[in-house]
Length: 231
Image 1 (tube, rainbow, N blue to C red):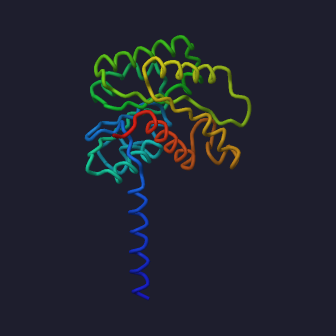
Image 2: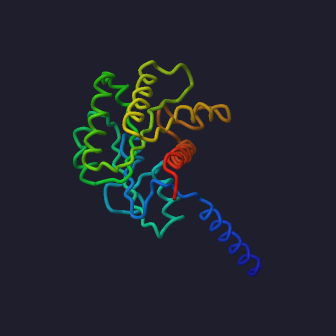
């Protein structure tokens, strides 16, 4: 019985090791790169505010991405950081941009912001102008920074508001202007609804379940991998 258990554990380890080795590298993740996730509660993921490594990245797509690539490429010494804050709009990002973004000097900056702007009726032109300003300031501080812009999304259990659709268009426009990778999460969740009910992926109007976060991580990696090919 003991031999069978040992054999099973060895097989399990080998399978896990093979899965880690199977992860394709992402060209944007140069050795010692700092990857910063910025946004609202979806990115925040109830992250810790201390140096506790078990919670510092939150419990969402950012954690999944960091865990997978940190385990697969330890020699790269990638530095993943999360500065998402629950409830934030782009106007809140602007207030803390210097401290929580520019001072951290990211090599890859991923931003997901907009659903709270929609809920608080931040005017569309102000949303775009402020977002554009933050990207311009970041590029001025580091011309080589790589942007990953994620469109805001909602649970598609009925018609999506015109305002959310317009904010998605704004993010796409800014991604094109600033040479950013564009992650279209709405399409991912809409397609997932054909496999399971919308509540399976997003538990309220905007917050994904752990299953939804896994979809987000997969799509984020797919888009970023395609945008910057590994050498």
